[in-house]
Length: 96
Image (cartoon, rainbow, N blue to C red; front, side, top):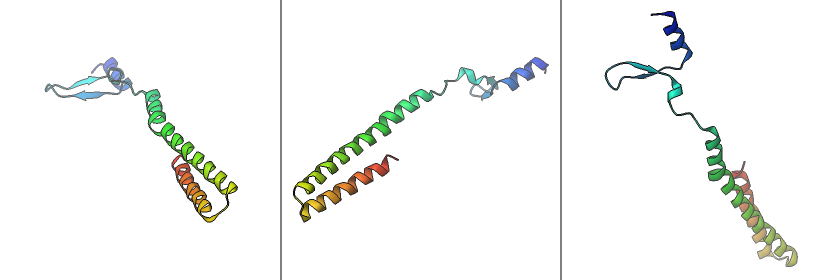
C-alpha cells in the first residue's frame, strides 16, 4: 500500500459495503448528516410544549379551585382545591 492510501484511510471514518460482493470503503461524509437542530425542534414540539401546556391548564384549574375555596370556605371546596393541587403537582413533576 502506498503511504497516501494509508493516510486517507485513517483520515476518514470508513464504512464497509459488501453488498455487491466487493469490499468498498467510503467516507462518512457521503452518508446523511445528523441534524441536531431538527432533534431539538422535534423534542420541543412533541415533549416540552405539550407538557407545559398541560401544566398551565392544571395550574389554572388550581387557581380557580383556590378562588372558590377563599370565597366559600367549606369541605367540598377544600377537597377540590387539594385535588387540584395534587393534579397540578403531578403535571409539574412531569415537566422536570
